Image (cartoon, rainbow, N blue to C red; front, side, top):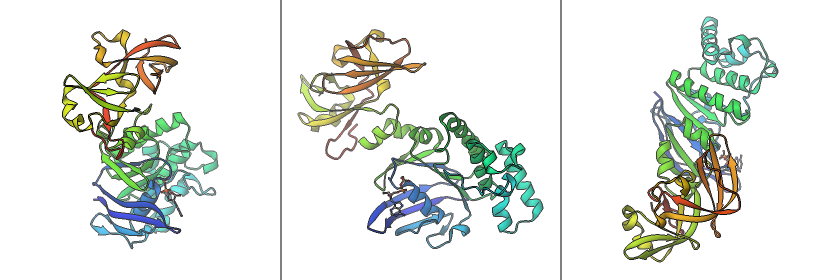
Length: 367
Ligand code: ADP
């Protein structure tokens, strides 16, 4: 059993650098938790404190039922997998994988059994006599995973394990990590700056910025109900379209006034935006919620926006349209059949039931 819990954990580096600021995270036994955020937000430091590779400045970390603040890394019964694989170049695959067990004086037959099992799980049986330089990036990463698996740890900690791989291999390894997780039934904490990796792998995602956790939730909640403007813009590709404007009221209906266009809000949102009547607000709409009017059967003029289509970017199964309202540039992600002419006005329909509003001062989500 390895639930991991961080209570008010901070890390202050020399020179008063607050890398992690009062982080509270509870990771359940067998849960796959992803720490995601831009470079420098404190996710590696958080992971390294769980691993015992970095001292904690404030707060408490539990692994299982034990407070581990003062427990050395080697006694925490967790395995870490790094971005750079950290394999010993002079050892074979089998030697690399068994190194930790040999240090801990495991019996030879047990070491062999575990290495065999791990190479089978990872599909690297043929490679056991090679040295790291004779392996591809993906194979090296599998060996690094194997070295972690043979230890049968209470939890796996992954620090950007796929960052050094090319795009295709990253996608492949992502699926393998998913399968591995199902098979191993252990707790995983996984650090990445890649929001796609976070969305696809995590049972829950903790989004970090400036050393603080902004939101922890399951992937769909993070995507559909972001806690603030930062989470909304960090999660999702292409990023959510954000526009500054005002809420206005006409004949008991509320509109978002962008400057060049106005769109009517759905009734369910009226109560929540009422306090912003006449005031500035930040509007957000995801690119998949913007449609080419030609393909919408019953478009209301109140939710239709005119813009110039500046670029059409075909991506095979879909097309990105880069649009300009005269004040804001925004993106529509539409079906592959949409091929509007470039540098012409076109009409777009906003799905107003899906839009978000953020407070322009606090950046917190209003809707
Ligand atoms: P991330 O993994 O999200 O990219 P890190 O946890 O590595 O971020 O770093 C968080 C912050 O702490 C950054 O501002 C970084 O420069 C700083 N930092 C990391 N390691 C050290 C260190 N050993 N000494 C001083 N500052 C550090």
